[in-house]
Length: 147
Length: 234
Image (cartoon, rainbow over all chains, first blue to last red):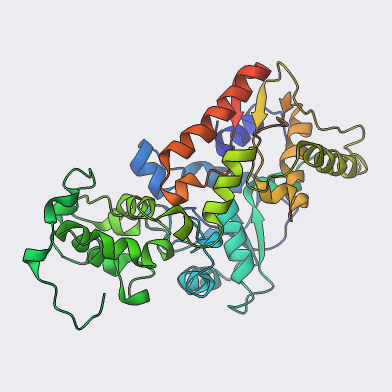
């Protein structure tokens, strides 16, 4: 079961309730290559709409990066790049992603991938975006839980 | 490869890789891939160059180059390829041809540790359980989570979840979100105390056999614990 299907199931069945007013900041969403473009090619289904639906349940103000979905730009940390030691090249790889994020004016970046999280949280200082909050999609959901 | 040395076609073996199912011989050399690639030009390399070198039989040179490890296999190249060449799969295939002891960084070390011990860190079972229970105690101190505990090796639970090794290493705080969601949803869940590793670095090194072993262990955990649903967030 994917992280998206499980969270959507919890929300739709009423097993969890979410408060959309927890975060009073603009957010944006990053499509990881393997959940999106590569899954589309390999399995015939890219997880593009599911995370966006979850974002809608958690946030009033979020906007997409451009380009997105199939045409998304890689964070630069995937494919094992965080563990090769080629750090200079990896940080360079992320430059276009950081430009995309900056262009939205978002203060919070949501994503559902450990590699993307490690990469973008790690390089934000290099690109003078240290105030950007980088959050897992499931962390956003946990933060918005109504108890 | 010295850039000033001419490459003579008669010395190459273009038939070397015709058995690969990545359609590299269909390449029209249009360079759409190179235009789409975020690291085209790094190391004087790009996806088109890699595809053409494989097609011409210059595989050894590509295997020796760093570029296939700087490429993240993001798939932008093959998304725009008019001929459907499996460029990211070629990168992975090239990676698989590196000797294990020449794989860059900690990728092979982590994978070897996982195959030997069940996780990339070679973390002993007692330490793993200690960390999980320690984090669970912290959650139980938060309002709304009184009595929270982590169900390790619970037989007959509905859902088994894997764990990314960094969450029991440098990022233990990041264990909490999923556990809080499970608690709020009233989920019947469990974690296995052996072979809990969610990452599978054979994906990165092009080692299909290692991936099969890692996935097989997770399936074995599901059988042993009689769990029918798997959450594998890695």
